Image (cartoon, rainbow, N blue to C red; front, side, top):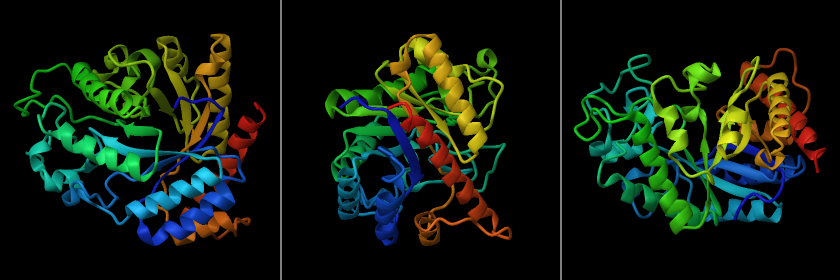
Length: 345
């Protein structure tokens, strides 16, 4: 299935069996009334995998996934599972459950477990390990089937550990070619074999020197050249969370032939500016169909209190803590963006 309607998307990390009920209520009472029609659910390894139980890092079950999928379907929301690929295999030197169970996949096994930025941001798996794809594809298949999904988000943001000089398979290889190999391998399985639409973050495809982005929103290490080596039917979610003087990556992705969805966070003014500028670029190119909507991301930790705060949203007291302030601003951002996107229909 391809995108056929204006996209009003919301993203969150979720992987808790104990929070399924408040999460379903959040979908029904907050997201659906706001007009959200795409939900990017980042479960990563917080799913109880049957094919590889050794990599299970959370408590979300297959039954939980089916219940969430049913609530989304009943409310006209397309559910897109997100599973972080290649990078983000842990935080700092601490590996996630995949690399704990399969350390042979680690691109940088020599890095101490307690290492921190700037020594390492987070670990990656080796894109050339001969056994990593089989495991990853089997995990993806479980998520696709459990969530009854017709689309899948592969992450791929903030990949820094690639073509490491100590990796016997990747040493001396071109970073863009290795990054493109990982993307193309995923595309072959997801799109060609499973028939689902593929989404990914766009930051590693942004040339920082050319486009003026920093090392987080763009690439300074060579992966950006992969933009010309991957299929154009991948939907790119291009994230920029601060208000910038310009967002030239939007036009760049569109001119390259991609469908691009700008991604904001909780800062309302920055989000609205990013959306307006993205729409302007698409209109100037005469390719508005290549910019179908926007996604509001949420990177706060979700717990019962967070969901209830949204469900029963009232003005926060002045003395509210930082977490509640961020949730309040996220709610305002969600409201502002969905209102603007609804006006396009």
